[in-house]
Image (cartoon, rainbow, N blue to C red; front, top):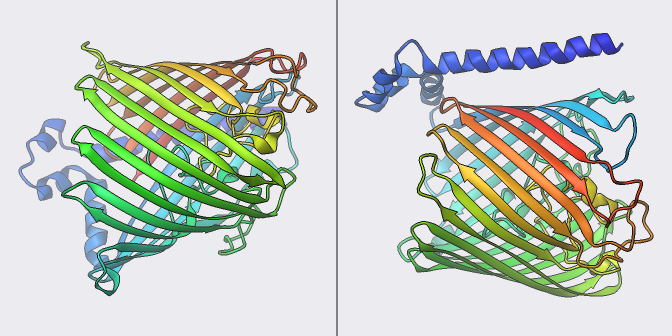
Length: 467
């Protein structure tokens, strides 16, 4: 059994590498790189890239209908995901995400957008009853954009859409339990913007359902859950440039949770005020600061919380274009989980893969990572135009060390959550093909119990083909 499975694993991995190599060669065509650089117009460039040329031919045949897509393959390995020392604490899986999008403009000011996503998983280790999982397809984009409706100076977008506000800290991920397969909102978004003055005001109404089949049932429905409860809300967001180098954002975010689907779901109303300042104070210095006081009630308890995040980047004058970062994040905590800062729609693995969504679930909801002090020191570099690398060190503390002390896995008398090392290398082989390798290690501290002191590791190879 294991020998057969090992052969299948190697066959899939080698097959993906061959596809990537063939895709690279196909995209490069028979012309030399210098031919592409010397192309005098778009038609010459299309002759160099068969993928571009094929896409252009299809676009001509479809008329007003635009299509595109991408395919992302990931090979994941992790161990001690929950910090346990067990013989079967290693996991290996393959993920292949295909997405196909369409856009059409029936009128000059109206555009209809759709995107269908399919990402099954194959678990190689450990043995499980269902090794092939998530065999379903669903729409993660299905919306209508209308510019200047009824001659009003706004843009309206209605339907299933992506939303990113500010730096994506509190509003980006509407489907946290779906991982990186999807990130969308069922929403109405009204935007009034002045490009000349770089000002924008937005009003957003959100109606997300925790059950994936509640509004638009997936094809071959696999009964997935997007969140632990239904989430509704409204956001008033404004952004302006105080100067060419300085941007100021402000948001009022109202979120109402209801109809629990899982035990750790919540019910209540939360009010959050967010202020963001992003400024390039010097050509080689970039700064970011965002603060968010929060109040309301959650699961019948009064909520008063606070969060802060910020960093300073300094670009070095060296041959590899290095940038060093010093950062800090604070999410207030309490001995009662319901009184921790609520991450709203910011529950995703933005700065790591091994801790958020797995280890943080020992004392709270997955992808919450609240009750946290995080100090970060990092380095990024771009040795070539196609290669970028980075390495970060994160020191994590609990804001309240007595939080969830009654839960299995938490000591109740330590505040050091642990130390996290993350690294990544990204190589753009051409405009259609990108490779990425990520590696992470988490060393648990005394916040976790004695039986949760195993070092957690994470390794991932990713290849993305874009059309």
